[in-house]
Length: 474
Ligand code: GLU
Image (cartoon, rainbow, N blue to C red; front, side, top):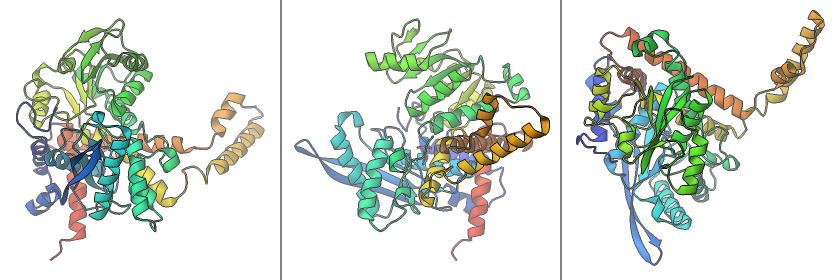
């Protein structure tokens, strides 16, 4: 999978084309639109790292797409497909994503062009630390400048190395922990960040499935229970997405990994598949399921909801016509080229776009960043106070009604909020509110035919106003 897919439409071109489709529904001058579209700063570095007895020259990027709000925000990926265009496209998507969910950041993205499977943990640590020191030298990282996070091929482990390197080079920065998000809890991470993108995908699709008239058009009942779902990618995002769908009563009929797919009309258990994968090295030959050797064919199987949760451009003009799903939820960034998007729309498939649907990750990163800046855990101040208030309330209810509440009711009501409760409810509220905002544009603005265009309009309107208010330096 690369940033230039089978149709030769590059990922960046796809993003720009989607932007232009929406721009014509907004009121902004060409100059403002061009400024919103442009990548403001691009850093490309090459640095040497000693691997075994050899010196290897590593190529890496950090792109700050927009400075209309600071810091810039977005993940860092480790992949052999990383190039400047890919990182530019991903950084641009971050700008629109943050605007849609009202997270006050500009978009950014980083990438290191490596196959992480080829390196030992120690070598990966050396590469990550050296990359971070390059970001520090060029002023491309900092709590108020640019804040990385995990992405494809990275996790909380790499974020710890980034934090430690930044903190060592900036010993006077009391806010150093806020220089990166997606950290382990012990390093200043927030509870709920690991599952945030998958949970956000679930909340977003659940909201989409709650509108009777939209579901009727697709010939589907409202709700998640009973829906037949295929998930592509069992990384952090795909795994959690699959898990939440399964818990809500959906049937996971298909799972796709880079080396094969499995399909079972009766439904797969995601944890059992994960255990099988750990034991055998892949998901193929899972008991009771049909093997599909070519993972691309997995996308074309029968289902109600298809959720690509891996890399960009996996659905392009050559396979879009074979997609059988009634809804496509973009958990990955850019899984559809804009040509594929048009084909799916013509087929009447409801596409829920990445710039809304996978924004749960950056939303909870925002909560983590706020936690780091405030230097206090969520819930620490109010938990006991809330519990005492609920206690008093129950006593008043009992004495005025003369009835006792049950032990179970008492326990449920008495619990003050923990950090995880606040993070999950903040995420849920964000995903529901933003879906309604986008759907309102989709249903009320004449000529808007798909949710992606509506989502871009929503983003452009917010960023455009921000640029107008900032004024342009004369
Ligand atoms: N890499 C994730 C994304 O593409 C999260 C970014 C972040 O938390 O800053 O949205």
